[in-house]
Length: 438
Ligand code: HEM
Image (tube, rainbow, N blue to C red):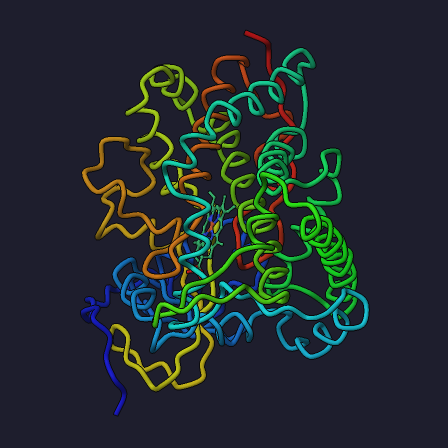
């Protein structure tokens, strides 16, 4: 007998012939669906909310309530095994061997783990990103964002993703960690290489090319750790290298070397592509959705309205599409039994579009009473640990874009926008724009 989750069985709704066809033939592995996934998501939510995607051999969890139930139960739905299965899917052994040989070792992701181990590591990471600490960072973050946008304001045209969104988030994390400036290109390549490992779209060749980049990143991180071991500074690498974790019985232990490498790697990568994607998506809506630039202009000076603008943007255009879990036993979710050992994906951008929770979900509505219920940052014990920093960066970027730039337009037809081929995020690869200086 399968155990059951908290979520109720939802009513199955009749599908249109097009929706029926999508359900029968669609897979999230299809890059066309990845770029424009909303019809596929809606069809699943209506007809088969827990959907076995044959192209991926993964169970897609598409309704808000079910995502919530699964992410709140880390004992039945394992993050550790889910990520291990998804990472370099089908080639994980070879990936590990490559890093052992060329990257200073294979360091399993300490934060992508299950309780009780996860709880200890999580406590440590939370200290780095408390809302108070992020608030203290605001003046410096503001300076970084203001200067970056000022540096392109005169140019009249640029790539909003490569010239603004990516360097902005990289500069922030480089400064927090205490890494070297001027390495935007390398860090951007490293981030893409890590994100590709959970994207389920790699051939063996691309997996190995990406593993080579990750190896390079790990050697760089290890070098920095050695420097900080000798001479600590006021930065996050020093904090992690010298960090101690408190166990449940109150005893205290130093982080192991492997844990420290994996946490610095997580810090460097987790917040990078995701926040850059959110800022890239902001340019996308400002240039393609009528009224959005005017709305931003209207709320830019009002802190409370600005926060709601950012929240509704994250609901409407969530950067992270789908992340992994594994069912550790036969379990029934919303009337469908997911077998023990099956890989699952929590499809956050479908959850954020769930019309039973967010009526008229495509509407940008800053006055939604449940604006904070979105799952762009996940939920439960693995809820994004960097969300205060991410929100702050997006808010500052939106404010400075609005203050320094005007008449922002797409420099290519909307139909030519290229999306990264990956199941993990919904990321615009490149977004050429034109604009004037205010
Ligand atoms: C808009 C930007 C961001 C989005 C949309 C985002 C999204 C997410 C999501 C959906 C999760 C849940 C993972 C899961 O349950 O499997 C997560 C976890 C995490 N995020 Fe973020 N994130 C963002 C920015 C950041 C930043 C700026 C950092 C730090 C520098 C960060 C660090 C992390 C870490 C370390 C975890 C793992 C937490 C855990 O497993 O306990 N994220 N994020």
